Image (tube, rainbow, N blue to C red; front, side, top):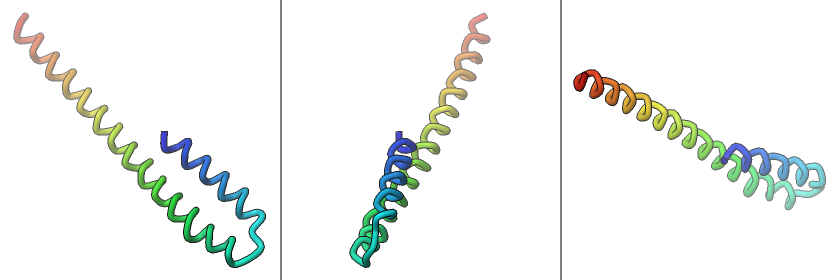
Length: 73
């Protein structure tokens, strides 16, 4: 989800940057685009960490289920 937003924001910044000719435009890049890209990168990292944690929980639940089935056999 955040990967797509990050790519879209990067393309938007690149398009905007190509037409910047003054300090006002440069300030938009440094004060709007760059912080936004930084936040999106952080959100992407958090999403990846969350997904890895969820996968670990699922794996452990499967292990617990397998142990429970062995006890009932």
